[in-house]
Length: 229
Image 1 (cartoon, helix red, strand yellow):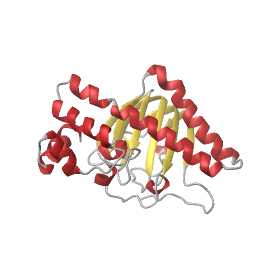
Image 2 (cartoon, helix red, strand yellow):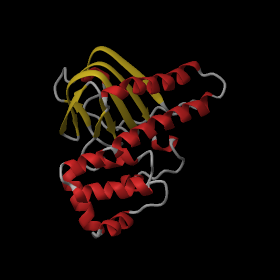
Image 3 (cartoon, helix red, strand yellow):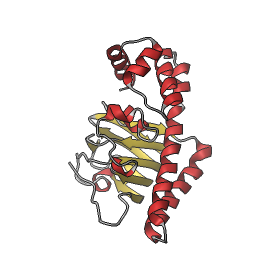
């Protein structure tokens, strides 16, 4: 498993811009592989299929892919997917808050790690950025990249601030899934994510969510896992 390459005195946040025809086999590093950090990738232009824990994810422009620590990533083929333009950000969980536990279940109560936890059990989380919002998303990545490159006075705090704003945008995008669940007649799942969205800022446990929607913790876990991964 690949570990984040920490450097003393430097924020543990890395930003990369991939441009040109970059096959996943060269862009992702050793394949297949897993890592101990969080990965957020925004595909501006891309086409192809990525395997995450053996599950195929079709990647296209406008897709935002979140990969949690421990998930095995690999291309579906030697030139697949072809990344023409993308931003990537990766960082260990403790950058967000020191002492954050590694258990994905505990991330459900964290407003910034929740989107990663949702897909950690069996799949990566893939979100679709609406066309009208894509320019703003590119600006977020570019601002974070500029702080890391320029290293002006106070850049440590600025990097964390830009990363936090980026993850808030991810969380808001993930919250829109509630409406999608209602539209496909998944009222139980919609109710679950409603509870999490309303109460994520405070302490929140599996038992709390289960009690609110009238299920046992075990039943809730089974339902959500079967229907969403």
